[in-house]
Structure formats: C-alpha cells, structure tokens
Length: 269
Image (cartoon, rainbow, N blue to C red; front, side):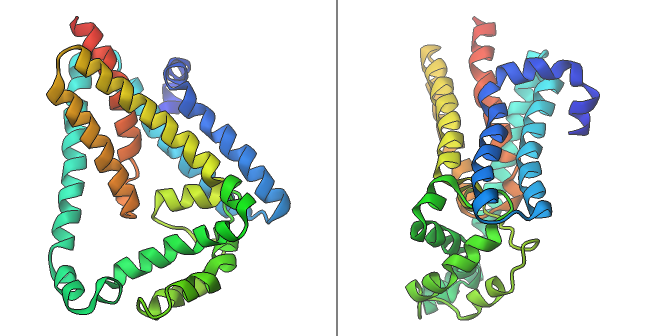
C-alpha cells in the first residue's frame, strides 16, 4: 500500500483497468452499514476487516503499477506467480500426506484430524448463524462482527456435529472476543462480514476475468495456456477453501494475470 501511495500518479489508470474490484470496498461498507446499525459495531475489528480488503487491492495495484508497462517483465512475473501458487499447493499436499492421513484412516475424518474438525467448526458456525437469520446470510453481519455470528450459531453447530469430532474443537470458539474472532478462511470471512451478496460480487468478477482470459487464449490457438488459467483459478479457489491464510495474495495475483493475459495476446498479434 505504501508503494501505491508513492506511485499515486499511476493509480487512476489502475482503477480504470480494475474498476469492478475497486468498487468492492464501497459495496462491502454499504452491506456492513446494515449490520453496524442493527447488530453491533466493533471499531477495531471492523477497521481490520476493511483494511484486509484494501490490502488485497494494494497488492493488485502495486504489481500492476510495477510491471504493466513492460511486457517482458510482466510475463516473468506471471511465471513467478504461477510457480508460487504451485509451491503453496505442493506444501499443502505434502503436509496432508503424512501422519494426518494415517490418523484419518484409523479414527475417521473428523476425530482423526483435529485441524480439519476445528476448521469445519470455525467455518460452519457463522454460516449456520446466517441460515438461522436469512437476512444476515444475504447481507452479512457487518465488517468486524464475526463474534456475533459465532455466538449466534455455536449451539446449533455443536448439535449438528455432536459426536462427530473432537470436543476440543468447540472450546476455543467459546473463548473468542471481538478482537480475536478472526478466521484464516477468506470465504468464511467474506460470507460472515458481507454475506452472500458480497461473496457473489467477488466471485462474479473473478469468473468473468477467467472466462475472458480463457476465450482470448483459445482464440489465439493457445489451448494449453487456456487450460493453465482454468486450473490456476480452481487451485486458488481450493487454497481459500482450505483456510490457508498464507494464500492471501494468491487471489490478487490471479486477478492481475487473468486481466493482463488478453492484453499480452493483443501485443503479440
């Protein structure tokens, strides 16, 4: 974000190229205003939630400002980003392929994998709270109000998974405070804070860009490249479903690559 501020003269062009994404914070704040007015407002968690969104846009703007004028450098960054995502995915696979698999085989999916059971508990609880309150599922509880969702959905979530996982999977959720009720799961955070409306807006933008990049590749006869972008999109979605907090910048890197790919094909033509 500091890099973007220092290169603020380039920012208007970035905003034009990624207009839909830069409108998301306004949508998220508008959705959050409903929750802030009717549920609660915790200033510090709310600020951190919105700053998280701005941080992703800062990454997108920084990489675009740094390389969008140099096609050769842009191509090298795309390759580096692709390798980074592949490395993260490989790390996840290796981590899951050791003692965790043996434990799951012996004791079952939830009991045998304490990490998985905790993730299910953390992800399911606020979503159940939204199901119990359909308006909240639609527009969210408001930025920073995860604690409200956890409190509202905890008892029902525990009943739904009674006996399926480790009892300890619920203990730490019950100790959450407004400042500590964050989650490493990006999709859970988006649904909890901004509802299905916010999630649908984000997904629609990414899917649009993925289809555009794939169409451009196919039109240029680059079928292998088209498959690469398709699987790259699926891989990034998996990383977020897997609660991998260190995959945070995978999404803005993907968006940047998807949006610049058609431009690179036009330059080659």
